Length: 130
Image (cartoon, rainbow, N blue to C red; front, top):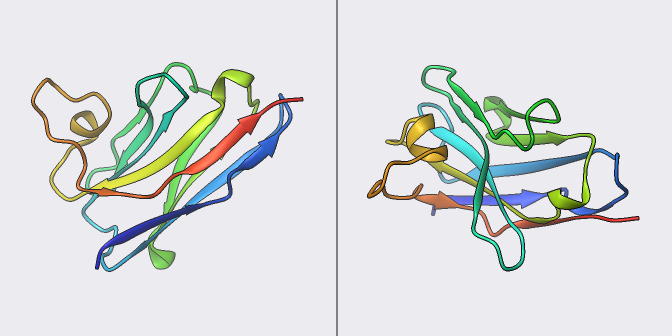
């Protein structure tokens, strides 16, 4: 059964750092596109960063550029999101996703009608507050 499980969320002070992990089981990350998304209460889901393990293409959202970095460890079948310079507006539930067919653009900046990624984690809460 393909599965993604996030970990590493928590409460952090503004300006702090946090690392989210996403462990894949039941499939390998090779030849997938992977991504991190977040959703704050009352707001739509937002793409944070996506990475293609097929061609190395990368997308990073403007609101987190220079502060957040996506990476993978294929040996551990894991995806990471390193977050620094955290702000209150970064608060939300963070989800990792993976898909064998989508490109980075298709995953993070989809055209109307593009299906969402097939595999999703259950989410990890990140709260930035003093």
